[in-house]
Image (cartoon, rainbow, N blue to C red; front, side, top):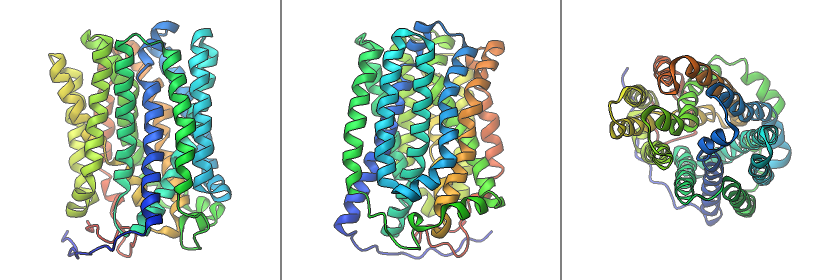
Length: 411
């Protein structure tokens, strides 16, 4: 299909309040990633301490997805009622409480850990929608694509969390001390940063100003929105499976030491960060559809290399390809949902809700498969889902009348 001509647009410098909002949005994304990766970096130690089989670990991780899936349908009305700033600030506080609950519950038994992970998932789900709605507002205010770089900020936070976790594992710092420190940092720093978010009374054309009940109901009936949600689900499965299982698979499947397992996880996150940071240039030049098809292929190849590699270094190289391949699926889905700013919050909420089903089904599915195939072989399911995603990438093609990203090439 012939490409539409690309028109060069010289963007004027952003006003100071918008520049501050960009920095604050980066902080919100990075803080969310740092908090989640800090927990994920200690999964092997929690598993060993609680003596969990792969299937039981999958069910424990299901608590995170359950909390998120309850939060996501509520997030649209909550963001409309209280605004992105207050929602993100409140969820950062709840995230700190959830990490503290896991940290202290880890000493007492499984029930408290599951409760803490449920709260973590709830906070993460509502936080995710709120910061993406604000990110879409900032993107519109700037007049150019930047959403994937906000998600790169999230990935940078996950890299920092994973590397910090690897260092603390190597230094034999207890899980409880580690997670309590992270809880204090996240609950204190992120709410402070949200004070620089854009004003919430932004007018009827902005995402924060739409009527959430009508937009949410209508979005659930839109084929394009639902198809984007399915695509995001596939990429989220690939991303979430990497977050939850790469370190465990490296340790169990390749006999790697605990610190090397965590560093393998960090390599995955670093590759995702690079893909998200350099993604806007690729998207503007080649379009969403072509880029996602190529990245899905990289993700398929990388996950299979990780599963079937003869040595640990080759497996780590596979993880890098896997991370690059999954890097843009979620942010492109969010941007595609926000192409029409009048319905952005409702569509983003629907797409996120469908996508997060991967976090509900993923952990127990991998755990059950691992009981029959080993954790490493169970990860072949990532290639299957990404193959399905490659077939429906046309759903993210920007509408012809889209004004959400004026510099982006139409596919």
